Length: 412
Length: 197
Image 1: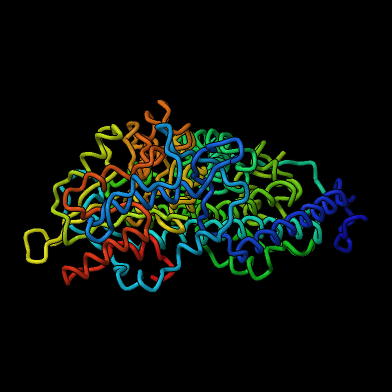
Image 2: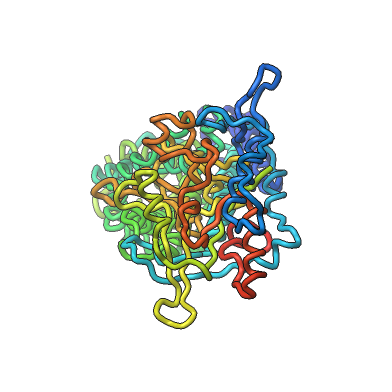
């Protein structure tokens, strides 16, 4: 299978066109399966916290093996009864024990082999006598003599909503956004193939990005990738790393926490520098509407909407990085200094914002990485060596190329 | 199977802070952290109430659900425990806790949280029950010794009750019937019956 070229382009087929499309199709299929699993996860109703350990009394004879839950039950009930008035609850039950109390340690615990939600469901269901004596859900705040943040808040029902926001909304939204967008990109590669330089390579170069620009780009992108990976460990470690064991998850989590902190300064510096470097070229203009209307020429080889230095797609990436990255940096700094200027509810909202913006940013940047590497012929070298082929510049940034040529005379 | 709970009777709590003090002493809780505290509502006005609060060991515990490193886990008697070796100090459990139970020491210059500590219902942690390592990390394991949390057992007015939910619920009901007033078990809906809320 060769790539379909625009009539009359006459250029030799770009390298490995079919390979890219087959690769795209395979990746798309894998992502489709992952997406299906993720959608199932949303609706499979296993988001409840369920008991993972059980208590019991140690075996008392050779006949009995394993833990016995009966002893635990009786011990706990008997001891609790001691708190009630004697005239109602009778004498101390110590002398009427039906089980053996031997060593100092009377109960031990072990992991439950197949935890189930049954117990949690039973616990959530109040008996008819219990419900009338239960006080409703309310935010309750008083005073406390303790000098700790939030010590005066007795009850804060918002916390339960925060749990839904974090464990359900942000987590699932992120997985859907990242997997879904990656699927669209892979499917696009499979159907459309690589965006070629449709008039072929001219062999003549023009400088597109200077050293400072490239250095800033790679500093920011390197730290973003590390921030994303460490963030994914924290957000999805339960799914991705827990199968390797508790210990591995704990250690990776610890590395991720510190890594997340370490890679933040170069990221913040990069965002600021890019803003200063590129804001002039990234301001919106009328040309952008035209570009967007033609889909950026992404879908046809013979369509090349006019653009200056940055086209509308690049401007969109620029602004999502500046705004998204800015929000991430500001919320991240806030989270590094707990309660410096926000109370517990405020911190909760900042944490949610950070998580949701972060997963969306990962999805957006996936698109950027795609179009800057496999998605478009020659695009990668613009940011790596700084030079692009003149024909590529002419197709995607015609007005910019004319301007450059006017200023310097045609490139050698 | 027993399901242990805490119940604080606001009509009996006299804000003596014995629960908080004995807890700190029993578990040698480090400086800057408290596993149990007393909150006073409407201080100095008619209707003033005090209430002791710690981890309530919730049903469908939100802290366990949000923990990114599987630090927190629940046992079959309802107690929520934590594994200090896994904790990364992210603070998610604190945002998700309706009762402000998780505590963090300030670990570094950047205000980073240290490893979380919280009420264990006097039930230790994942280390061997009654071991030295368990005491160092989680405090005393009274449950393994067949006792209930020190805060409740030390309460002089029997305001704070601990133990099987059915038993302490019955004690509270008998008490409310006998005295003829009462304002309901505080925090129970949020902690134990979240689906009723």
